[in-house]
Image (cartoon, rainbow, N blue to C red; front, side):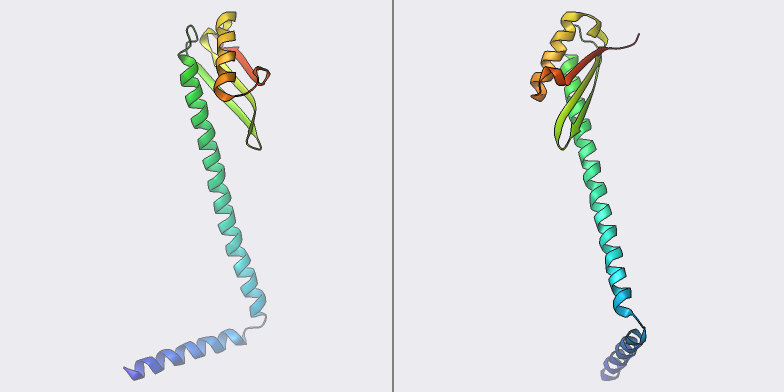
Length: 128
């Protein structure tokens, strides 16, 4: 058993000596560490972007579901545009939006549901 430990110690020492013999090992190690850090950072950034899009799609789906229950609205699709976490624009496309009363109801409901001014919301009728 002692011989096995001595052999492992010898192997570790010889590997360490080989590493010490490589010129510029500090630079190589630094480059390796930076590469690993960049890989981790890009992975985290991609996850955050995916989470952000998923959240936005969830909001759009919920809003479309709510708006489709407005009388006369018909089928509704929505798109929410955000900048720095703030809603800067909302597009609502509905089958019944060619009726001015339905359009006004959709505009009001969207502004209320998202807590934005009505000038941030555009309501359009769906192409036939």
